[in-house]
Image (cartoon, rainbow, N blue to C red):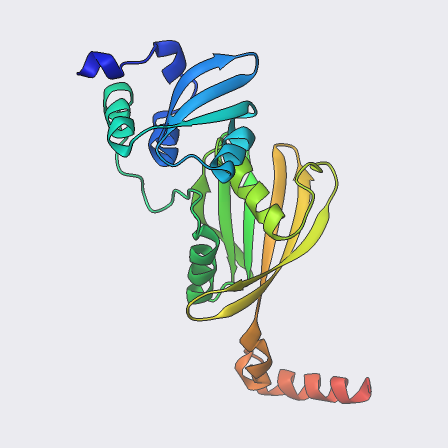
Length: 224
């Protein structure tokens, strides 16, 4: 049975093992800039993501879940379990990021591309700390998804852009200011989280000393 599910080595090399298992796709043919894949859940959304990821035209052909699993088992070796620092695109990846940032008290999320990896850092107490790593292959997918949600132009990568996203989770509602900036290795994106409950924050809870708080209040009064 294995032989009937074996595909040519040149085809298996079109995508990584991680991509094959993550998207549940099997390459069937590559010709004239077009790659045909088998998929157990073909959709326009998946097609668009693969086009962005692979920079090729994509055609998806439906097959059963059982057959796709057999293709994966025969042709791709499943990698070891990923660490918690690896970030992949899922339908709820943005919500998970926001909840994580909210839980640790972060106000900014930075997506930063480098030569060999892309990292996600949270700003906490004025300092940026790395929490996740994104592969170079998946980074364009995640960045374009963020830009689409913020109403930004995904084809414009050389100029800064600003947008906004409103996200509702099970426990909170966020407005997010989205800023993009071109860098040497690709686009950097910064998400500034503007929680709806920000107007309930007391000045006394912001960490001012007694004298600093007094000075601040006096300056505010004078500016009126």
